[in-house]
Structures are given as C-alpha cells and as structure tokens.
Image (cartoon, rainbow, N blue to C red; front, side, top):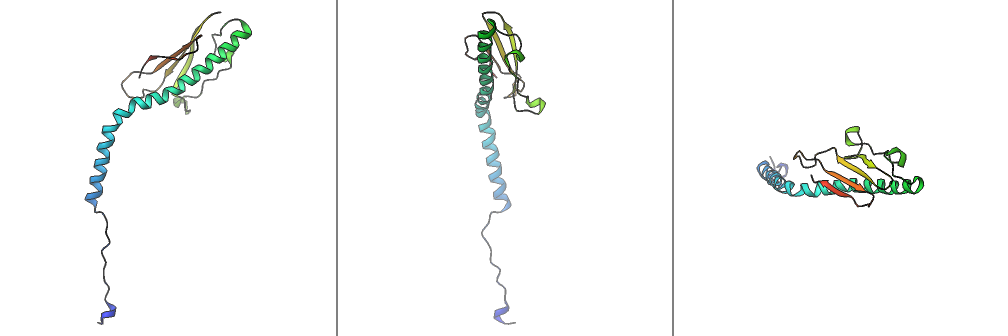
Amino acid sequence: MSKNNKHVLKKLPAYNLQEVLIVLVIIGILLLLALPNLMPLISKTKSVEAQTQLKFIYNSQTTYRYMYSKYSNELSEIDFEAPKTVQENGTSNYSYEILAATNNSFKAKATAITDFDGDGIFNVWEIDENGTPKQIIKD
C-alpha cells in the first residue's frame, strides 16, 4: 500500500444530540415562562375585531336613524352581515347581536365564542348610541 491511497477521515465540527436536546429544553422552558405573560396581549389584540365591528354597527345604526327616525332591532335592516365565526370555518372570534333599540337609543353586543386565555370567562363588548365600545366582561 502506498501513501497516496490512504484516505484521511476528517472530523467535521458539529453539535451532538445531547447539546441539541438541551437547547430545545431551554427553549421550551422559556416559552412556558413567557406564554402566561403574553395571554393578555393576545386577548387585547383579538378584541380589536369586536371594537371594529361594533363601530360599524354604530355607524350603520346612525345612518338608519337618519333615514327612519328610529334605531333598528335587526342587524339585517342596517346591512350588517356578521362575519363567519371560527366555529363556522371563518375568522371571527365574536358573535354580534342588538340587545335593544328604540327611537332614541340602542345597545349592541359582541360576545367572544372563544375563551382566549382558557379561564372559562368569555370577552363581551357593548356599544350604544354614544358610539364608544365598552368592555363589559374582560377575558
């Protein structure tokens, strides 16, 4: 055998299985520590949907009142079609309804259909003829 036929095995620098597993465990622990702190932010972000839709209902109710001198009890009369909920394969996390409507006032409600932080409490927002969404039940 000559010197030219020898194959030299070169060891490449790499991480071994134990090092990779330790890194994954550390990432998992950090996620478990951070997730409870992120839940209020997630709930707040998802509540933007309710506020936006309730403002649309308010604007539609105001237009309806200018035309008919009263507020409507029906979402369909004010041309509001609720977006499909996540239960209906849509993207909405809230269901919408008009609670009361008279000549001079109305109240509409958005109720979360998803418990955002898993505590058993569902987020509820309301709006009235004054046009400011109010959080009634905080998730």
